[in-house]
Length: 213
Image (cartoon, rainbow, N blue to C red; front, side, top):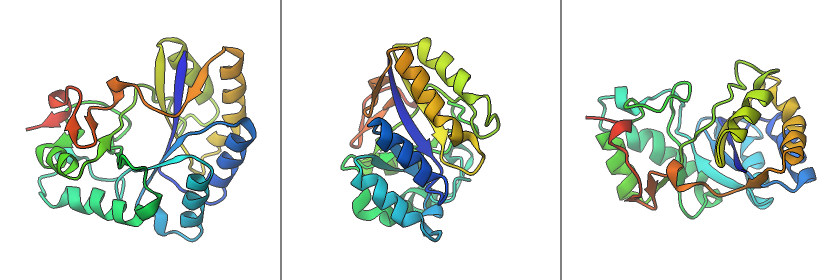
């Protein structure tokens, strides 16, 4: 079985640095989907730079982490949420311009995108990365590891979303990696096609069920 680790909502000083330490000790590469406003916090940019220097991929997770595109009628929202964040990421960006939408709890339904957002991503050559595992580390900080493992054991390739946030959840990251190793899991950095509906601006999978007309 394969698993791809992705960290959302950082960088968070005091958390992301500890996560990077653990990943470095284990030789594990991940993707950090950063929030544009968070990048402006003291010390956050340096953490994103460290992550990129250590071989992790940096992706875009909107500017404010508040706008669900399928519920937003503002045609300027994609440029504000996606474009401004991409500018802040700058040279740290993965060449494929990785983007992950805000899912309001990780729910994959037609609230995820608007037609304007899809058009913006396609025109800008972005690669949209979704997920198939949400272990709820943000609200189950001491319980998420077992749920993450259950998800990984249930499929051939898991893309899990965890968060480098100050919830205390990341202190269990070493236990997750230990358990994955015991299970013989292969921790990889790329993504299965089923989780990438847009690749470099081209539709590569179904997206109508994720887009509100």
